[in-house]
Image (cartoon, rainbow, N blue to C red; front, side, top):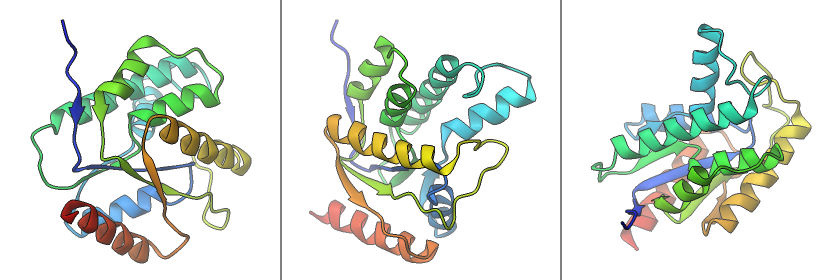
Length: 189
């Protein structure tokens, strides 16, 4: 039986290392009326901490990756009929990048999901930005790991066939305006 491939050119991904301003950017876009999907990793961490679970990056990285993948697939599927721009704070290839960064063995449904659930071929990547980087209860990595994560996301998305657009270190509003302009150009091409 053939497996369906979903290619949603109106689904846009914003990626990069932790603390590069992705969440603030998506919050700004949301406040401007753009539909957004927030990062699965933070959601998993918050839920696992609440119920004293172990699917956490500092306890069970493999279970954490599996949980993120499940949420990312669910978010993709639940929005499959959306035809307007939808912006994701990270996508399924981010889970693959995380697995590679942690030097874990990948699992077959992860690689299959990266192939099956395709976003717009253009992905926006935010560079590491030490001036705004902050650790918190969910982000325990130091800045050097944020830089490594950025590099891994660049590598992973490129290998997965996506074209990266670097989002410069600008104000949140300027970043949002740039993204919206580029999305408009891509949709009119």
